[in-house]
Length: 97
Image (cartoon, rainbow, N blue to C red; front, side):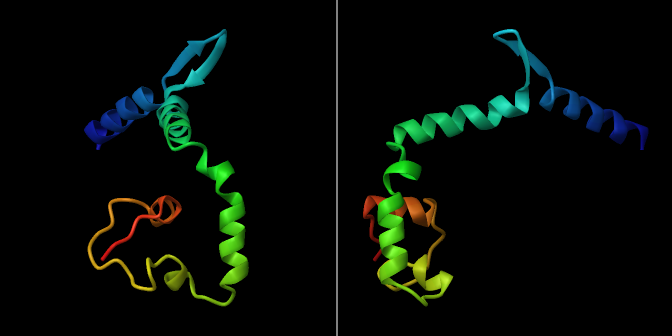
């Protein structure tokens, strides 16, 4: 049990290590999450802002549809494992056949 506790403590110290940035101490886990989030938000063209109108239009024109149906493409569920999140695929107009 001591070896396990030592391993967990080492992992915790690595993940929650504080890095000084502009005079502020920021935990490394925050950077692990924030850097990819900012990169993909910029790379995809701010879909969380630019696609809000489209999302609301879809919700208004398809009331009462189940979540499974709303997340399907062309009314069919993707039969193979989808490597791309469905929201991204729909926003880009991708189709699975």
